[in-house]
Image 1 (cartoon, rainbow, N blue to C red):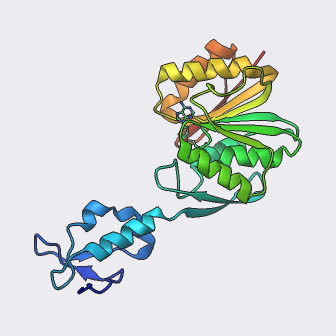
Image 2 (image 1 turned 90 degrees about the vertical axis):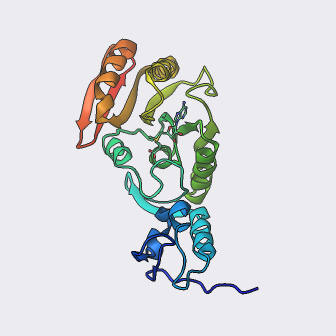
Length: 246
Ligand SMILES: C[S@@+](CC[C@H](N)C(=O)[O-])C[C@H]1O[C@@H](n2cnc3c(N)ncnc32)[C@H](O)[C@@H]1O
């Protein structure tokens, strides 16, 4: 079979329709290109673009690997496209971590753990404690479990749960944290806060980070559920809010 040669990245190709030449992006950007755009391309002799398409798709299947320093500890995280903030630890997550006070025996819960940066950083900082990390996305859970192993963390329980649906009712938490999922809707937020309150010890704290647009809603909801709300930090894009179970 006549297989067309591999087009190197950085080369230019002619789109099937139209006269302008398009640059093939460098390898570092190839994951961002996406197949539909590639399918407009042919090589300089007008041949099939299948090779570019295959290259792109195979690159997209590979894990992304991040190195990050969180709460003074180095971490390696594997992530994948489709998870929240797969290319770098989210700015909001970092802001929340900066503002957290953690005790080494805390029993904590990370609501919506994604691939695990928040919960695993807390687990490392609380070696005599335990962290429940939950997400409704099985891909996130799979990656968070892999990242716990990869970083030598054995004091985290990582499981699928829609809000608190799979969290034991008799769990007595010292700390609840979340980089809240922005789009679950007000009703789900109210359920999450109510169910967190139910499982928190008196004196326990809940600390969440949201995009600034949700700040007022969180403040109002915390006041309704916990009777108090404290704006810990307002950044350019995110706000960290906390409350205490009285
Ligand atoms: C803003 S991301 C934060 C991810 C991670 N904690 C981080 O800091 O990178 C919110 C996460 O909440 C999860 N999520 C959304 N709705 C949920 C629900 N009803 N129950 C549990 N997790 C949920 C999403 O799958 C997503 O991973």
